[in-house]
Each structure stands twice: as structure tokens, then as C-alpha cells.
Amino acid sequence: MSVSDEISTAIRDENFTQEDATTRISNPVLRGFNPDPSIVRRGNDYYIATSTFEWFPAVQLNHSTDLANWTLVGHGISDDRINLRGVPASGGVWAPCLSVDQATGRFYLVFSIMKSQVAEAFDVDNYVIWADDITGPWSQPHYLTSVGFDASLFHDDDGSKWVVTLEWETREGHEHPGWIVIQSFNPDNGEVGDPIRINHGITDRGAVEAPHLYKHNGYYYLMTAEGGTGFGHGVCLARSTRIEGPYESDPGSPFITSWPIPYFGRNNRAYLREEYFNPATAVQKAGHGSLVDTPDGDWYVAHLSSRTLPGTRLSVLGRETSLQNVKWTDEGWLRLEAGGNLARETYSVKGRAAPASGNDVKTMFDSRLNRQFASLRGPMTTAWCRTGKEGLKLVGRDSLFSRFDPSIVATRLTEFDADAETTFSFDPSHFSQTAGLVVYYDNLNFAYARLTWDEERESPVLGVILARKGEKIEFPLTERAVPSEAESITLRAEIRSGTVQFRFSRQENHWEPLAGPIDITYMSDEAAGGFTGTFVGIAAADGVRKTKSATFRSFCLTHLDG
Image (cartoon, rainbow, N blue to C red; front, side):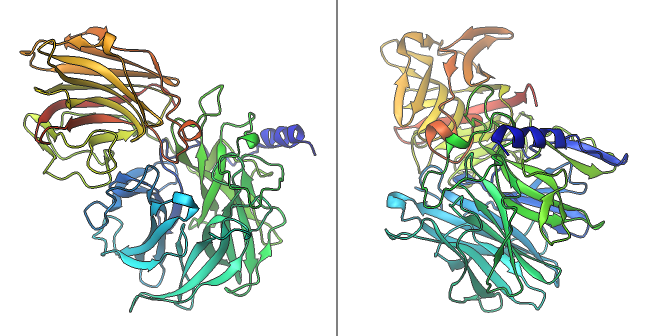
């Protein structure tokens, strides 16, 4: 079957018949930067953990009772129990695995901390924490292993526990990236056994990673991601009657993908694989899956996915989370309930469900910060970020280029079109003191509309600074002087399909443009070469004494579509 025939068949299968008492839900279900989902059920409650990389708090934890409506209820780590200062862009906390010990009901959360990827050495440590409630308190991190990343935890029905990891291959002449290994784990004394190799790839797509083990009908099932975390991605399956193997490959793998045609990619180090971009689907990069069942016996796979900016191959929102209906075949393999293996743009849940839009953020900063806000490489402490009657006081620290102590408070951009707005007061006295509104991908790629000081004009000035692949770009001819006595400034970012137009206002409903519109499609995985996503928020910096503060009285991010 040709590529076009396979895609046409998958599109026709999208219209499969559902029972009357079901609701169709649009993918992605967790929109914006929410990659590497790990889904689990305890009783009638479902939870999804997603990666946060260098953003803090670490590991987002979403809850649902119907698999349609999801609420961010907490994070795995929100304090200084881990240290991410200095980790590179797209480093930090990777690929969490959330699991439940059915004997005790206790939650376990395993995650990797990627410290360096220089020379493809991948210096990484894996940890586990546990809690009796999803909102915590979570235990101190317990170190597990550094053999590789994407670690998960499997609870066997005999009470034993196993860490399942990609063993990262660093040697020339050996197939990259390596083997899937298991290691015994004793939570009572913390002991971890030696690695046992169990699989070297289920398909020929290569780049095997993201291993999860499940047990069903007497078989151990190994679910992996293969094909790189880009356009050739897929969810694959193998099984064995023994946990140590040997594992039989599913002949239909990948059973979820965005590129439905087999290809050979073993030892291919390119993760994006843009040659496998599929223009016939809106669900790109489908892979990195995890499995869950319902009390009624239905099955779902949560998986990583991406939406590209229309007309491009650019994932400006980052990698997201989608769900698929799956079923077990008579032969004992998982298949999409709709048939084929092309990831669908919708999935079904039983009953009537009306997912609420919960991605807009509006705050006057007069109470505790919204859970949707995040900072970089460390928690939002009162030493530099505190709310009060006047608003949010943000103390300037490092520049936005820094991997250590930038003062940024931001939230995920979840649609291609959005408006962001903030009102703040700031009294700079040096050009290295800034405060304002930022559209941020990482410390090498951002757009920052900021108020600073110009000694030649003897006045504060508003202007825009860009970071594009680490290069600083300024627009001095568009800077606008602001009277020193101005009580506050309102900045606005109009984000439209890969561009941003910054505006400012000193009086209500009178907007003046700053530099723009500016092309910000370079804030994407494909252009920036990273794995994160676009955030929008507020920032302050002080390169003099790191004491100058700005007071933000409000912030709102309103998404215009989706």
C-alpha cells in the first residue's frame, strides 16, 4: 500500500461508529508544552505526569475523573530538593513515570535529570520519589541509576519492583542509542540491581527509548518509543512470558504513529527526521506512549504529539499530550480502536463530557501564584518573587540569557494565536536593569519587550530585544522614551501564527507599537534544536547589584483559538 493509500484509509477510519453514550474529545488534551506523558489510574481517578525540563516546579501532575477534563493539581517537586542551576536548555527533568503500587495505593514518580549532552555522553541521574496522595507530600528523591534516561518503575504482581531504562550507548561501532534494561529495586533499603538487557528495538525505526512495562493476561508487555522524538516517532510493543525476556516483537508496531509507513532508521542520530512529516494529519510526532485501563475495561494510550504551525513544519507550541482509544486483539496485541496506526485527532470517552478551557491565565497577583506559572531552574522563592497588596514584586537577577538565576515567571502558550498583557511599574537607573513582557523558548531564543534606562536621553526607554540561537538582536531606532514620572506601563504582546507585535500604553485603550511584527517561528523545536515549548510571561533583570525590583500589578494571557 502506498503512503497516500495508507493515509487515506486512516482518514476514512476516523469516522468510525461510536455508541450514543460517548463524547468525542479533541487532541491534544494537554495543550502546549506537555511532553512525555505517563498516565495511571487509582480507583476512579486518572493522572498524567509530563516532563518540565529546565522549568520549575518539576513534573506537572494533571488529574481527571472522566479522561476528558484535566486539571493541573500539583507537581512532583516544587522546592529545592533538586538543583537545576546551570543545566543547558532542554536539559533538566526528563520523561517522568507515574505509577501506583496496587498493594498499598502509593504513588511512585521516577524521573531523569539530564545534566549535559555534550559529545552525546548524556550525563544523567535517575531518581524516584513517592507519596500517598498525588498532591504530596512527596518523599526526598532517592537516587536509582545513571545508566541512561527515560526510567520507569514496574510493580509486578508478586510484589517485586523493577526500574526499566534506556541504557545509553556511547561507544563508536555500536548501535545508537542502546538497549532497554531492567534493574531490580527494593524500596525498603533502596538497593538497585545490575542492568539486565531485554530489548534492542522492536522495529527498524531505531532510537528506542521511553520504556514502560505492563502485565496483561500472563504476558509482560514492553511499550517503547521508536523513531526519534520527531516526525518519524511511534509507539511500539513487545511481549514475553518472563520479565527478563526474550521479548517477541509486535508485527504491527508501531501501532500508533504519525508516519504510518515502515522505514529503516537504526543508528540514525537525527531525532527530528523531518523527511517523515505527514501533511495529511494534524497530530504530528505521535510516540512516547503509556497505557491505562478504565474500571469498565476500556483501554487508552496517552502519547506525545505536536501541532505544527499551519503551512510549516515548525512546532512552535512544543510537544503536547494526546489520548487514543485502543483495544486488545484476539492475538494479544494492542491496536487503535479505529483501525490503522495513524494517530487520531479525536478520541472518545463514555458519557457526556464538555471539556473546559483552562489554559488562559488572568491574575492581579494579590494572592498565591497560579499553578500554571513556572520559573527557570529553581523554585519561585520570596527572595526574588513575592506577591502582595501592590502586586508581584520581581527582583531583577541575571539576564535572560543566563542558565542560572534569571527572574522569569511565565506560563505555557497553548494556541498559535494569543494576546498577553501586563501592567507594571519600574524605575531603572542603569541600562542593565530591565523589566517587561517576554515570549520565551529558552535562554538562547526569546523576544523581550522591556523598560530600561538610557543615560543619553536621561530617561527610561521601552524597546525590544531578541535572542535568536544565542545571538542578541536589538532595535535601537524603535525605542520609545517614557517620562520618569510615569506611574505604570502596560505592555501587550499580540501573537499571531508565528509572529509577535509588541505594543505599549500609558493611558487606557491607547496603544502604541514597538518593534514588529517580529517573526518568532525560530522559537520551535525544529529551528532552535531543542525539546521544550513557548512560554509567555514577565521578567526583570539587574546587572548592577541584583536588587532592583519591578512591581507587576496584573498579567493575562488569552488564547484566541483551539
